[in-house]
Length: 221
Ligand code: ATP
Ligand code: MG
Image (cartoon, rainbow, N blue to C red; front, side, top):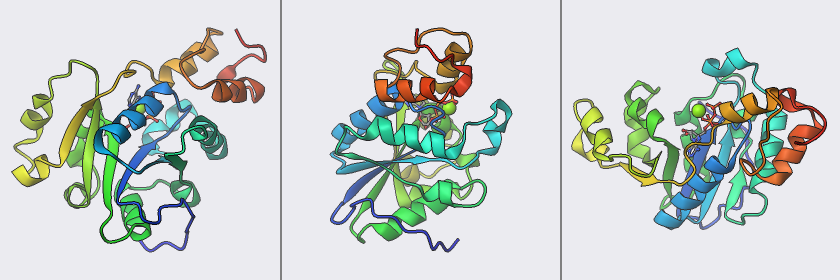
């Protein structure tokens, strides 16, 4: 898919770029801690968060507007000079395939640049069902964020029948510390009037209460 959209994410000279896709509804410490752990582990010069358009599998919970998800992701990442947020999927009509986003970032990077696609381990186990999965594995290293103690061989065992050894080698697991935090749990807590303190950055928490997102009452608990 050819795209007109361009943005300046200060990627000049970047050779190792992390991409962290997600709905970010809302973004939380799990996402941030995972991105930072992967950045340090692989010596990435930058990690770009890529909030999705409206994913078909998430329509059912009445997804938050893309501008609010984008703003929360901006607020959450501002204090880390290695993090940036891309609007590429928000500017597209409808849902974006990962392969379109990867091709977009390939065009922004120099030919020597390498892409590291960060995602939860559960999603990786499904990778063969993704659109253009084989091409995706040619273009990027996949980093599967796992719970501490996760048996990493599970990924290899589950995928070895469907992927060549070269492609399997492009999937690497990294243990991250805050895997139990989820946006679903945060949304549920807010709708029940329970605390979300320390599960996401304070700036994002303030934004949620101020804008009454997720049924949050005006006062913080
Ligand atoms: P939801 O509960 O609505 O599915 P989520 O918390 O899983 O939301 P997403 O925006 O769906 O958040 O996730 C974006 C990416 O971050 C996905 O690759 C997902 O697997 C990964 N991820 C989600 N939660 C965590 C976490 N606590 N630690 C590390 N990675 C996570
Ligand atoms: Mg999820």
